[in-house]
Image (cartoon, rainbow, N blue to C red; front, top):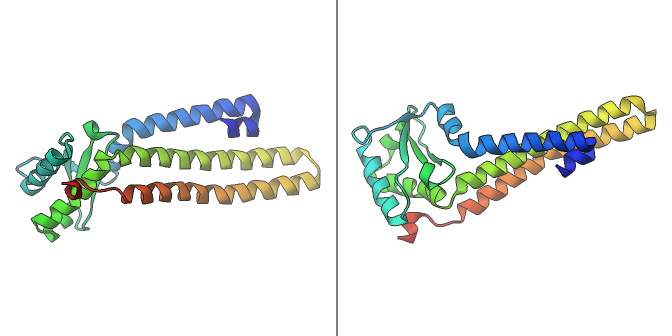
Length: 198
């Protein structure tokens, strides 16, 4: 909001507040559904994925967290991920490729890693980081267009100075956003998994 006010006065602050509120609301409540839909994840029953259900039940009991929803992705690429704003609204997705590739112990290790993200609320932290990164990018674009429009009415020196500053900010904003996300990812990766703690 401070950046919005600096760029556009009271109207800029209100626009920045509306953007931030909308992005945070959407990220908090719908980021898990968006991620699952993006990868065409399908809900899986115990009969379909008995190995996954058995491993997740053991791990959630050790970590003292609720049982998440289980999804399968119809792809041969070996992968797994967890999503959800908190342990009560979490989902774990595995690909068909990782099920075919790993034995029971290896699969449990992968699931333990994903459940550690759920237990430590890393998904929420990552969603907030992504929201901040998006807000930085949007504010940079607002600054660019604000400077470009303001420069149209000034003299040549003002237009050149404002234009260079706006372009510089437009280029640096994605870098700042990426650094925020990398820092959060690095912080999350150093935490222990439920299996390691057990």
